[in-house]
Length: 299
Image (cartoon, rainbow, N blue to C red; front, top):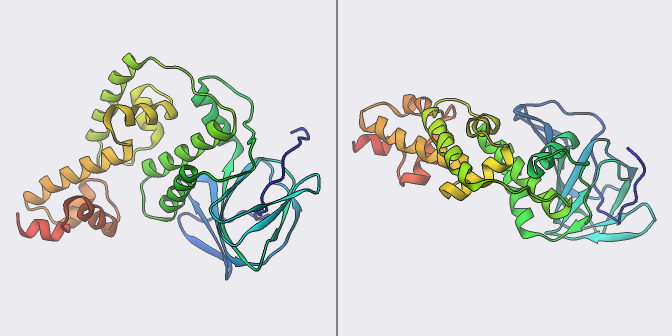
């Protein structure tokens, strides 16, 4: 990748050695935690709490580094020795290959870093435009964007929790789409809305018929005959729900039917695709107001 000139940006760090975990938490130090998920192997999340560490000049090869400043602040030292400040609630956007370094602004800082693989981001951009595009480059390096913050928070939450593959991949795509369309100069292609309605009907039937299976975003999009980006956008437009939420509601409806027939909560959870009993119980209560056991006892 050729040398490029960037505006001053935030100061964060990518570990030099990969940390190989599934959905396990690994502590590198008392105030540093990394998350990786086997289903999304090229995504890494790092949370640093109350750190006073000063980072030297460094760059990330093939990685977009997106930082969320939770508390404190960091001075950003850019290629021209200029600097700016990343404050709480702001997001730092660092391109692959961009040299950066950083110093806590005052005392300690608490932040999260999300590392996106460059090829994954480029693939998302190509799906949005409907054609191959150049590697997206962030034009703004420090932004205050509440919607982006919300999407990144959701991404961290689902990767760190018991969510299924469809929900995780949806959260990743939503975050990447926001990043490249708002800050990477990527423009969505026009589509045929008449054909899209029929495609979503196929996807709805597919999701409803496979409640007990692990379904990926790619699986559902292929059933509809759309790219992942267009599938997510059109599905929400046509149904009012994300594919994950639509499927969750169908799972709960089916679980209620099985419980009314006398099936035990453990078997019911497995029959509708929940391998984690606690996750099933919490989700069932969220949408019915009762636990599966309470619902069963009154059936």
